Length: 375
Image (cartoon, rainbow, N blue to C red):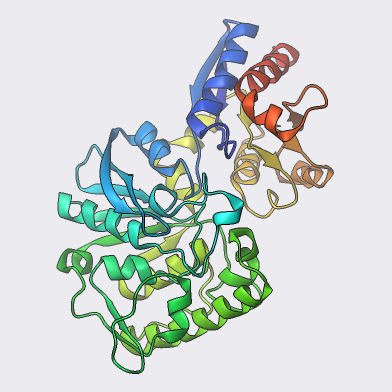
């Protein structure tokens, strides 16, 4: 039998990581019955993180009624692993950007309160080890909303209690952590994050990601000023200076805001899942690694999952193939990071809508071609 590890990221808006792995597996099985297949759906902290950990470690999803990005009620979820003491929370499950129309996005109004509610629910369930994934958020509130859900209060210069949303950051004058949920003080947090953006500044949460979340130039400037102000208030209130910590700008500063108050360590999301799933051993023993994502471009080379998997495969001299929906010319830089070959699942000229609607079938067919070529 020929061993292949299929470790796909999600195709945002069309396939989850689990569905992408299933599509590639279907293609390989159509090509030959001689492949011994191990599927490991991947996520780096964004959408699909909970499901990836549940597949790797066992456990169950727990549904929670939470406050959505713009204050609307919605159903979120977290993962409770089989140990019962460890929970996995992904920002995208309550504060995510997927599904929000472009003309509705507004980080000045968006809140992470729902993510805080997920953390609170996991703590109240009894979890004392929490893995929090950052990615795919529609928010830039510096974590104010999540902290408010955990019992932290923020006040303006007149002593008035502040509300939620990114616009509130520049109004903060004082904070009170005395109401922080006791179990949040006791718990150990692992922040799974694969971006290194600081809290604010030219490479910070607002400047880099604000436009993608609907902020115009004036909004980006306002959010950045708010993050600077919030960082100062958090430093005065907790003694932690998060201003330049790599990764503190993840999920619109949510990572930095939570890090300032909770007992947490910031680690690579890839490394956390790699350890939980035993991925390195599986790769070392395989003949082939197949990975991919919706779009592979120059950003992929900056430490995203496909790049990390290529480097891991290269460590053991195992060929690694990337099959993505779109592959740009700049992705060729992945050849120096362990990726052996790049394939696009789009087999003819088509618009994005067509590609997304047929993503599973296209991926199955291209995976079959790859399996036949290498079989």
